[in-house]
Image 1: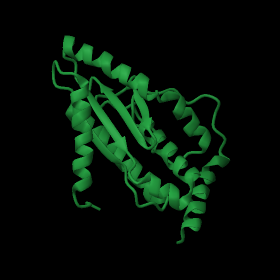
Image 2: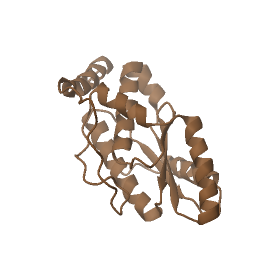
Image 3: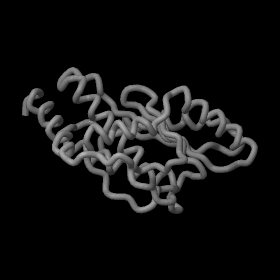
Image 4: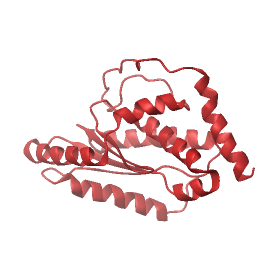
Length: 204
């Protein structure tokens, strides 16, 4: 399949579900279960651009996310409540944009944002840190709960990217905040995990 055909296929793949108009209000979210997941939710599926626009309203910007990081650092230092930092990145977006066009790359980013949001609780701050890079704070969540969250996000993202005919995969790194430590240290560990995973041979 040549690049022009692949770009058109991505457009069509996203456009197929646009025939179902989004509702005016998203459905109520269920209470979180012990895993830290928002209740029983429908399996993620490619969504029309209207749905990704609703997701963007949920995501905070980089500055607000780092303010949330600073606030949670104070809370962790004072009370010791568990919190885990998650960093997610879509690698090689520039190459994808060069091959298929910026619009196709932007649609991929918007859909991955929706998938990350769909696996997160309303209380957990999620940010679009840069093009193709996201951050999440999983409040009251230790490493075990974070690992289950990571597995769900990775599976949902891999399925969607494969169905869209793309070879890139979402990179994820995470780290719980050490008791009494600044969350900046956890962010550094999460980012380092992404870089270390990138050097490992593909498991697929």
